[in-house]
Each structure stands twice: as C-alpha cells, then as structure tokens.
Image 1 (cartoon, rainbow, N blue to C red):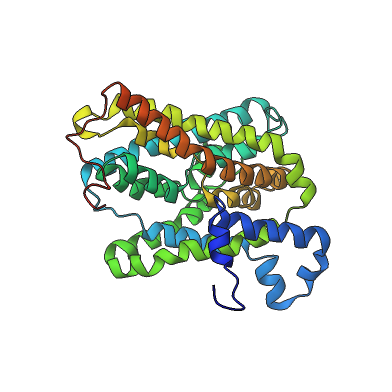
Image 2 (cartoon, one colour):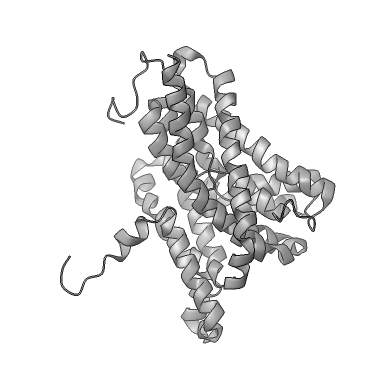
Amino acid sequence: MQLGKVPVWDTMNKIPGGLMLVPLFMGVLVNTFAPAALDIGAFTTALFRNGALPLIGVLLFCSGAQINVRSAGMSVYKGSLLTASKVIIGTGSGVLFASIFGAETALLGITPLALISALGNNNGGLYTALAAKYGDKSDVGGIAVLSSTDGPFFEMMLMGAVGVAAIPGMVLFATILPILVGMLLGNLDDKIRDFLRPGMTISIFFFAFPLGAGLSLRTLIVAGAPGVLLALLALSTGVISYFVYKAFVPRSKRRTCAAGAAVGTTAGNAIATPAAIAAVDPYWLPFAEVATAQVATSILVTALLCPFLVDFLYKWEAKRGLINHDVPSADAIGS
C-alpha cells in the first residue's frame, strides 16, 4: 500500500454487498447524526438527499443494455425458467399476502412491501459466479434473462393486476421504458453494451447513499430480526427454484441442478424497490422506510448464505452420482 493511500475499494468489497451497503450505511449515519448537512441545497441536496430515483433510472437503463436477445436457446430457456420461478413464487407470494391481509399486517415483523421487494429478484453477480463454478455455460448465460428482474417492473405489474396498488398502465410503461431503450441500444451495438456495463456498478454506489439518508439507525435496529427472517425466505426461493430446475431442465442439458439454487438471494438494487413503489402509489409510503431496512438486511444475509446452499446441494448430488460430467462446467470451458 502506498504511503497516504487507504484501500477503501478493497475493504468495501470484502463485505458481501458492500458496494451498496457501505454507502447506504453512511447515508444512515449522516441522516441520524447530522441531517441538516444534507439540506444545504444545490448539488449537495440534489445528489445526496434527492438523487435516488434518477440514479435508479440510470441503473435500469444500463441493466437493460446487458439483456442479450441473441443468447443461445438453452440459456434463454434456463433463464426464463428461473425468472418465472422467482417472480411467481417470490413476488407472487408477497403480493398475495398483501392482498389477503393488507399492507399494514406484518408477517413475523416483515412488512408486505419488504416481501414484495426482496423475493422476486436475485443478486446477478453472485448468480453468475456460482453458475460458473457449479453449472455449465448455459447456466451462466441465463443471467441475460434473469436481468429482467432488475428494477420494480414485475412487482408493480403484479401489484396492479391484483389491485393492491393503484399503478396506471402508463406508469408501468414508464418504469420499463429505460430498460427497453437500454436493451435496444445494447443489442444494436455490443460496444454500447460494454460501455454501459460499468454504469450498473456506479449507479448502485451512488443511489445507495440517498436511500440510506431516508433511514435512521433506529430503523435498521428494528429491521434486524425480521430482516434475517426475510433473508431466509429469499433463500428458500433458491431451494424451490432448485426443484423447478430439476423438474423442467432435461438431464442431458444440465451439469447439476445446484445452479438453480443460485437465485436464492436478494438483489442489491432491490433496496430501491420500496421507494420506487411508494413514489408511484403514496399508499405504500408509510411502509417504505422499514421495508428498505429489511431488504438491506436480506441482501447482506443472502449474499453470505446462498453460496453455502449451492455448495451443499452440489455435494449432495455428487455423493449420489447425479452430476452429469458429459456437460462441462463453465469454468472448464473458460466461461
């Protein structure tokens, strides 16, 4: 380490989800102990207090550019299967709970908004790493479709369809439009896709602070145990997706079903979903702060636990001779 240099980046990346959680927590600390510092006006307030939604739009645009419509057939099939599993089982269960019991009723302390926000998406970077280690090349390619769960579109669509949120069709279109424009540009020109890829990381780093600036330490403390329970529910969507993968992917087309469990996480950008939904339908606004804190906890805990789940399932299959060695791992073929 050079004299006078501090390894901020390396230290932050040692924390699961650190790119999002560290600036989020910094925002919480500033808002707790010196909230007036964020209200001095001009660019300071625009970026650090009010900048979340525009930066989330940047994230959606850059994420859309990474969706490759020319992906190989099996990659599309696997990605679509796991996406359907997460959205129907994850988001669907949260929306169903809200429709039956209402937005005010918590499940063991977990708000319905947190359930909706945390269960229907996955940590794309972690999925890709696990799929590369345990699965095959088509498993890794499935991220092109799984990326469609980035952002609150599916959550808003199901909430509007069931009637638990007043979300006009134009708002749904406005939500997905940045993704569509990004996807169009990314598929027209691979260089644009490559250019926009770092924008996902940069936007997450920047929008996490203003989201944290809407929370307090008290909120995070209250979210503790329910947030961990939410993480276990998110992890269970990986177990369910494992069996969905096993049931619908032919053995000749898979190395191991363990790759299906790699979606048992909460995406880093899910931290923005409660605020995005509350911005569209103010009915959900009173629940957004607690939901955001619970989702943040789920992001961290699932990032820690999901690799152990996938490794356990892989070893369980290996002991029973269920690994199809005729299909090489993605690592073995240099993916």
